[in-house]
Length: 376
Image (cartoon, rainbow, N blue to C red; front, side, top):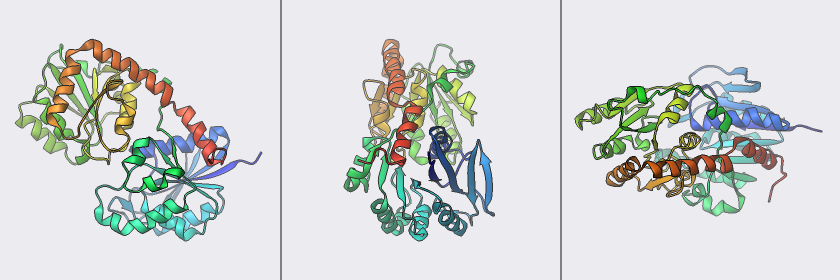
């Protein structure tokens, strides 16, 4: 039987850290288990020439780049490699937003199946979007199928509603067993100032759309809790200053970068997980799944994206309006004061991950879509 030849396309690849990069790594490695021949094309993170390598059995080409501008790599090598590799592919799978890939497709002359994974709209780079819009419309018209992680990705998008018939729901997934099979340590508990405090956890890049500033303001109104913040980013120093100015140094712990193992220990050790993102740049929030695996209730925000479709208000956690300090503080206090509610929502959360977000089931569906077995 002929192997399905897939060209997987994204801006970057492991060990680059990011939610989309984690997904592309899953796709590239695990589609092979279903019989696909996968080649992956990305750009280098830094300036330099093209690098060819094999990563965990996946042939990966990191195209030479002139650097990154407006969060997008600039690379002529990428366009040449795309054209060469597409000639040998049955299907090209493009992860967007990635304007360079759209341009490469247009210039390649590729006539085969094109499948797009739409991870989010471009939100911050308005000038880039104005230039990119015609190319983006070309891609959406050219695509045979568009994957979105939740219905919220369609409803909250400025572009996808008119392409709804092409869209298929393909959630992001986790392998539950990998998360539960860890050496559990009280990584947060041992750092508590007051050992009776409820442990509230956040992890993510410390950038504007994550809403950590809102979380800190809310935490000034929270009782009997301590907050643990894992991650680094451009706002790290200003957030530490914000915590100090509000007298939160005893209640807020900045953990910096944590390894994958340490992150899983932190999820397992916390009582409440909070994702306080403020704009739809937060399109899904895989970190919600990672907390839910361990039976933790999630407090998220009602963004016009996939975020509130992952953890469900009143079922697996609580959902509050974005940037609403008072509502966020109230939600944290409510869960902190009610252990039975935390445990009930946490049980529901763990069950939801098993039923809806199993990685193996999702990769099997992806293979079916890419091969044309489900093209309705």
